[in-house]
Figure (cartoon, rainbow, N blue to C red):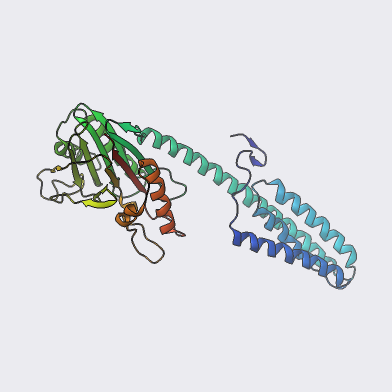
Length: 366
C-alpha cells in the first residue's frame, strides 16, 4: 500500500454508504442549496451564510481524501464572501462569524477524514495479519482423500475478524483418515491460542495413535497441561479406516454430526454423552468412547460448530440446520456448503451471526 499526504492511495474510496444514509445526505445537500437561494432572494437585510459551514461536513462523510473537505471549505468561504457583498445591511460581525464557523467546520471535518482513514488502514492491516494466521493455522484440506470428497467453510461473526476459536483439520494417517472439528470456549486471542494448541496436539497424535478414543483423550490431556488451562473445547473426531471400511465418531460435548442419506438427515447421537476437551477429569474422569457407523456410497456427513445451530433469526428462532440440510439439493460438498451458508445468511439477516461458524462436509464416493 502506498500513501500520499491525503492518505492511502489504495482504498481511498470510502465504502458504499447504505441507501438510507445516501438519501439523508442528498436531502441535506438540497437544504443547503435552498438556503443559498433563499439568501439571494431575501435582500440585503438578512443572510443565511453561516449554513455554508455544513458543506465540508457533508462532503467529509463521502470521502477518505483530506483535500476534498478542505477544497469544499474554501469554496464555502468564497461563497460566503460573495453573499456578503449582496447583504450590505447585515452587520460585519455576522459575516465574520459565518467565516469563522466555516473555517472551524472545515478543519474539524478534515481531521475526521484523516482519523477515519488512519483507522481503516489499521483495520486493513489487522485483517491481513488475521488472514495470514488463518492460512497458517487452518490449512485447507485436500478436496479428496481415499473415498472421501471434502469441503470446509469458516465464517467469522464479526466483519473485521477472519479467525477465532473454531478449528478443523483432516489428516491422512497410517491408521486411516482422521478428521477433527472443534470450537474453543470464548473469543479473542486466547481462544485462538487454545485452538492452535488443540490443532498442534491433533496433528502430532493422529499419526501415532491408532485408537480414535485414545486420540481424543490425548487432546484432552494437552488442554489440561496448558499453563492457562481455564479454557475448554467441544470437538467431534471422525476416523475412516480406508476404502469401504467402517467409520468411527467420538463426540466431545459437540453438536451432533449430521448424516444425509438418500435425502434424509439423521443426527448421529453418541451412545454416551462425554464432556468437552479439557474437562474429562473434572467431570468424572474415564475415557472417551468411539461409536461406529457404516457409511454407504453417496452418504454425506456434516460436522458443524454451534455457530450454525445457535444462530437466530430476528424473531429469536434457532436455525433448524437438520431440516434445512435435508431441503438442500446439492450433493457435492463444496456446492452444498455454499448453499447452506447462503441459507444461514438469509436466516440471520439483517442482524448477522452472533458467533463464528465452521462446517466440514464429507461425501463417500467409492
